[in-house]
Image (cartoon, rainbow, N blue to C red; front, side, top):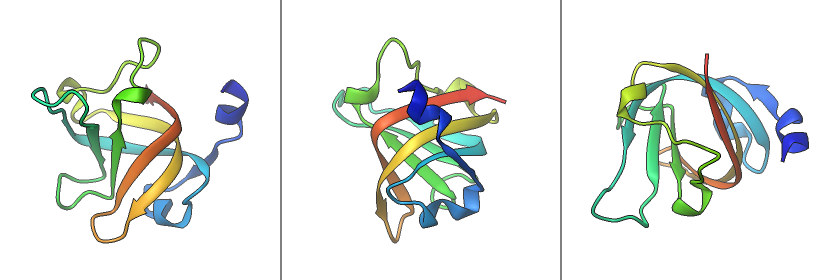
Length: 109
């Protein structure tokens, strides 16, 4: 996993739609984090670049990628600038929603 993270290409938040299938590193401000406590199988939604529905990027992180090694951002991180490294799996054209597959790593800037 570390080797893949090292190969992640830094991109601008506004360019994420051009990188489906790539492992990338993107920097942005967290505008909101949504969890669904009543549905543990639902993803954690992290909005960057704006609040829903005006976000530039929503990352949906499903339970299978939530581990003790990767603490998820929470609402307490709202307003924080972060660098997120991820492998882009799928893009929803109208909502600009990206779904995670394989790698997810984040750090405060």
